[in-house]
Length: 124
Image (tube, rainbow, N blue to C red; front, side):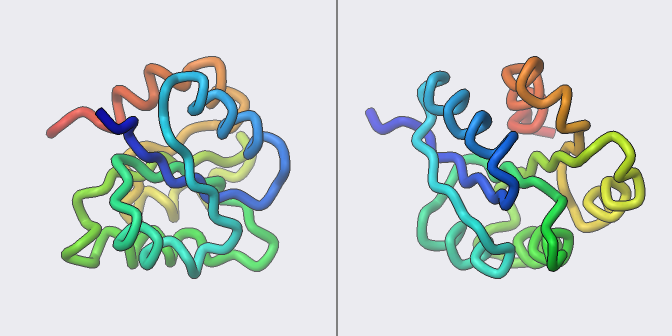
């Protein structure tokens, strides 16, 4: 049986690489993306079980990419777990509005990753 695939969109080396390593340790295959514009197309072609994304990109565009992913009929079923710094409350709110299923503080991401994945992947 094939391991589940997670798409991870990040720009900052940390916590991006730590997240990728932790997901791999948990048995996920991981495909990394470095530009929000790649998200929907990659999700269509790769068929991930989940998308994890850092909201803080220098040139923005992550919330727009989440909204595009959620609105596309071929990718709307893919849950999004987004993370940002604790002081990025406006960005966190925009991600929720865009359709991220769960938005968390990046400092809590790794210590509670298993619980966050379960919560994000839970069927409504």
